[in-house]
Length: 385
Image 1 (tube, rainbow, N blue to C red):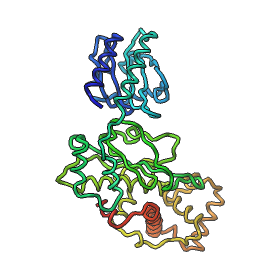
Image 2 (image 1 turned 60 degrees about the horizontal axis):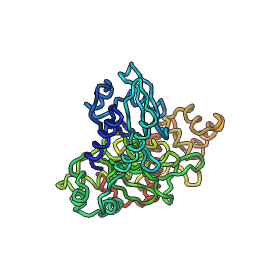
Image 3 (image 1 turned 135 degrees about the vertical axis):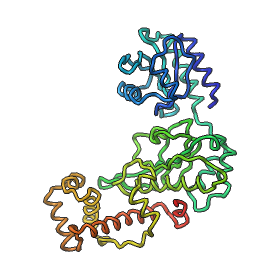
Image 4 (image 1 turned 90 degrees about the vertical axis):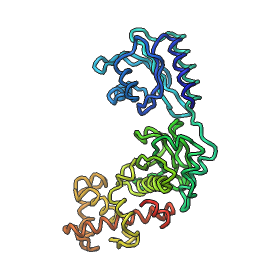
């Protein structure tokens, strides 16, 4: 995307309509704006100064259906927000909304010719917003799924995509999942979920039902990648970082953390469907400090129902009501299972230290499953540190 081309499109549309124009990303980031006229309102001024639409305005826009609109949509004024009436055109690239084109039109809705000009401009902007991938960048990113990415990977990425050198980056991983017995589980053999056409996406690579995405973006990850809502998926992501050729390990480490966060979310339904490495909690601690074979399994493999009951009970901090609701079972059934856990399998639920031990063992079992499902190696896991 060339910023000059985008600016010219917005200025030309503003001149043709005699109204102020702006372009926002779905997460509220300001992508561009025309020369502003006398119709500019406080919301537009604030967005230009901060390069971002205020959260309250975003919520108001979404409440009026901009996320699902398929054509021009007029929003009424909101004096409490300092917002005059305006018309929105969702700019789509493929199935996804790449941006919202806004025309201020307080008291004077667009006529037929104005709507036609708006649609034509939206089509041209959609072409400008299609990701301009640097040749070979996806192939380089594919190495981040392997044990031994090339030592000069950061420098090579910077040569192929100069934005890697100049912008704050983040990795996200979108992984396919399936619903089995009402629970989320990995689906490594399914196609990787597609993601939005977004100028913040510098490249992608796929492996085992997962799509690794390199983002020049520090806002909400789910807004940036926007996988198809009809897909069953999870998202893992790294913390924001700067790519420094002098610190060659930073990029592989960030990628590995995003990959592992997605893999953990796919494997453990107790985790949120979108989670960052820094929020993995006990999973992260176990990955950094233990071996998957170092904890005993608290229940035989042939007792999956009781294992699941115990894990959900411990995930819910021993709260019986929440556990019964999560399992969707009768309370009599729940207490029968707890009794079997205690009498038959020797699980000491009244002992806090024993409960902690069992919970850690169950979570390590989840990590071992993720390791076997996605092929984590010891070498790959060392990149997390």
